[in-house]
Image (cartoon, rainbow, N blue to C red):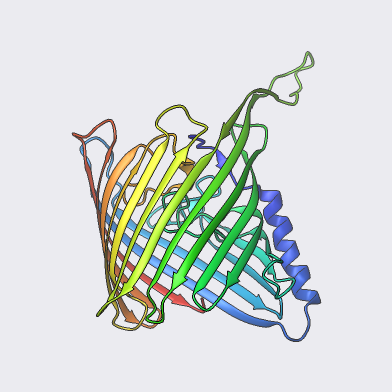
Amino acid sequence: MHRPGLLVNPLASLLTGFTFVVATAVADDALEFHPTFRLRLRQQWSENVLAKSEDGLRLRLEVGMTAHGPRETARIVIGTGRPNSPADAEARLGENVEDLPITLRVASIAWRPSANPAVPNLIIGKMEPPFVRPSDLIWDEDVRPEGVAAQWRYTTRRIDGLGTIGAFPLHSEVLSHPTWIYSVQTALRHRWPDRSWFMGGAGLWYIKSQHGKTGTNSAGDCEASEPIFTEIDRPLEGFLAGCWELYFPVQVFGHGVYNSGAEHSNTAWSAGLVIGRAQAVHGLELSAQWRRVESQAVVSTFTGDAYGAGPDRSEWRLTLRYRLWRGVLASLIASHAHLLREHESPEWRIGLELEVEWGR
C-alpha cells in the first residue's frame, strides 16, 4: 500500500473553493462569520545512527474563516502543507522562501437537510477527516481528505450512535489512473452523568487503484496510459475507547487495523492511556501511546512520522501537555521508534511545541 505519489486533485480544490464563495454569496442574513487561526512552533531533536538528523524548528500555520447558517456550515482555510505529502503540514524554518509550502487546507460545506436523525448531514469539498479518530493510526491529524461524506448521528439521553460514509478521489504523479477511497464507519458511545463514557466502533476502507504507463505513438506524441494491473486494499479497523472521571479524567483506547487486501505485513495496532485534561487554563495532561504498524496495513501517505511513526515501524511515545492560557498550549513529546526489521537501530525524537489557537 505504499503510494508515495498520492496527491489531492488540484482541480477539485478549485471547485470546492468556488462552491464556498457561491454558497456564501447566496446565504441569507442569518449567516455568521467566525475567523480562525492556528499556529504551532515545534523544535525537534533526534538521534539515529543510520539516518540523517532532522533537527530544527518547524512551523505549522492555518488561517481561515467559518460561516455558520441555520442548516449549513462553510469553511475555508489556507496554511502550510504539501499536496504530495498530505500528512505533513509543517514548514521547515531556514529553508528557501520559495519552498514555503502554502496551500489550500480546507474548502468545504456541511449541510444539515433535516433534524430527523434518519436524514444524514452532508459534507463536500476538502475537509477535516469526518471519521471518529481514536488514534492517528489511519489518519494523521494533518490529513485533509477531499471528496464527499454523509454523517448520521442518533442521540438519546445516554447513547450516541454515529455513522459515516465517504468517497474520496485522488490522483498520483506515478499512477496515471485515478485512485478512489470508499469508506464506511460506525460507532456507539454510552455516556454517564459524571462525563464518563465508553465507545466501540468499526470501519472499512475500500481502495482501488490502477497502475499504468504512458507510451508514445509513431509521431512521438504521448498516448493515454493503459492500466497494467488493478490493486485493491480493504483495511478494516476496530476500536474501543473509554473515559472515567475519578479525581481527574483517565482515558484508555485500543485501535486495530487489518488489511484483507494484502497477503502479508497487513496489521497495525495502537493502544494508549491519557491522564488529566489540558482543555481548561492550567490544565495538565500526560499520555502514553504504543503503536506497531506493518508495511501493508495502512496507506503510508496518510500516516504521519513526525515523531517516528509511519508504516513498518514500532513506537513508544510519551506526551506532556499544559494549558498556559485559554488558547495557548505547551507540549513536550518524547518518542522511541525502530523499523520492524531493524530492532538494533532505534531512533529517539524529542519535540518541544507551543501552539496558539483562536476561533476554533
